[in-house]
Length: 230
Image (cartoon, rainbow, N blue to C red):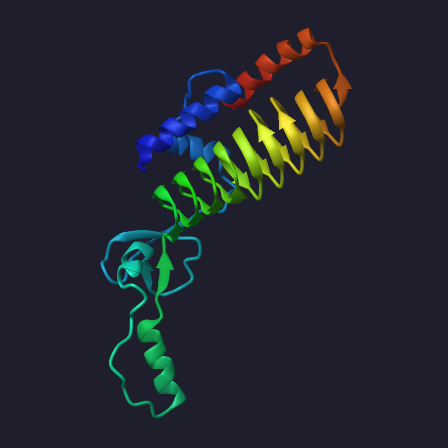
């Protein structure tokens, strides 16, 4: 997993939601859509000196998880005499490493930490059973999505928080079963709606008002252009 692959994933997400070619570099995509997402921090491996990534950089010493598992759980060292609690604290600091870039049963993971059963993950934290996810945290069962927070079962979606079953949608919060929508809050069972909150079982709504499909498609196109140009 590298920046080129991450950019390809961003291209797919933009294409599926907005129907246009992605106009952003990967860094521009990150700054525009994931500016408020908790992401990993770059640190230095205290053993090898190489770059690694962690979700919490408050520790003093880090070791890459891939290097750590090569030790097969054996980091024992020769016994030393202990004469005081201060001796214990000193010895503890000598072995007190924080593991970084931790993954379990995952492949093609970069700049991420705490990734489980996933593949093609880029700069994420605490992602489970997902594929092709960028700049996200604490989410599971997602695919081709970015800037997720505490959200599950998202497909081709961008900027989703505390939501479930979201597809081809942008900026969804505390909602469920949302398809082809923009700017949705506290709602469920919506498709082709935008700028709506606290409604259920609706289609072709703008700002909680029912409109015709023709009206909706007209404004949908303009709003999508507005999102990408601002």
